[in-house]
Image (cartoon, rainbow, N blue to C red; front, side, top):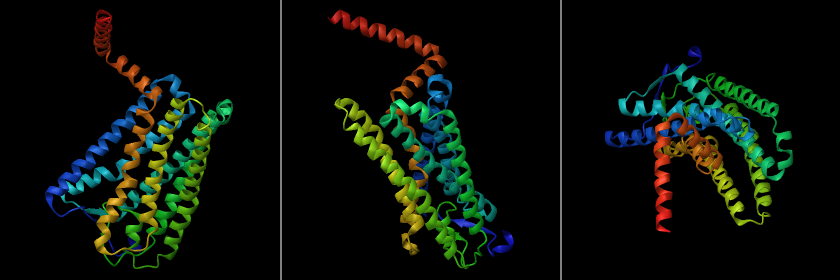
Length: 331
C-alpha cells in the first residue's frame, strides 16, 4: 500500500475554523455518541438477561443490531471529537484504510440487518402462525453469518481497490473521516472502475434492500389496515413509520454522497453535514424506535432495574402504596 501512493498520510477536514464552533459541535457529537451507546447497551443487556426476549427472533436481531450500532458509531465519532478539540487532523494511510474497511463493513451489515428485521416484522404480522417455523433459530444464525460474510467481502474489495490507486493531488481529505468518495477525489489514477464498483454495490445491495424493506412494510401496512381495532392499527403504524424514516434517511444521505458527481470546494461543508445523517443518525435513533415504543423492552428494563437496585424497588412500592391509599381516601 505504501509503494502504490505518493502520500504517506492524510489530513482530515474540520467542520469549522473557529474554536467556539468546534467545541459546540464536539459536545453535540459526544452527546449523540453517549446517547447511542447508552441506548444500545440497555437493549443488549435486557435482551440477554430476559430469557423470554432472548429466545425471540426479533430480539435476537435487535441485540445484534445494537452491538453493530455501537461499533458503527465508534468508528467515526470519537476520533472526530478528539481531532476537533486537539486540532490533530493527521491520519496514516494504514489507519485510513482500516477506518474505511470498518466503516463500509458496518454500513453494509447495518442495511442487511434492517432488511432482515423488516422480513421478521412481515412474517410476525402477516403470517403469525408460521412465525416460529420460518424465523427459527437456525435461520436467524444463518442470516446473521451471511450478512457478516457478504459485508466483509464487499468492504475488503472496496478497500483493496481504493488503496491500489495513487494519491498525488493533495492529502487533504474533504471529509471529517476517511470516506470512500472523499478519497477518490484525491487520486491521480483512473477511478472509473472504483466508481463503477460503488454504483453496482449501491444498486445491488442498498437498492435491493430498500425495495425489499419497502415491499415488506407495504404488505405490513396493508394487513394492519384490515385490523378493525383502531388502537392496534396505531401501534403498528407508530412502529413501522419511524423504521421506514430511519432507513430512508440512512440510504438517501449515503446515496447522495456516494453517487453524486464531484463537487466544488464550497460544497464540502454541505457534504460533511449530510454525512452525519448516515454515520450518526441510525445508531442514535434505532434504540429509540425499538425500545421506547416497545412494551416488552420497557417491561424488561423495569424488571432488570428492580433486580439491580432492590432499594429502588422498595421505595417504588412505598410510593405506589401511598398513591393508591390516597386515591381510596379521596373516594
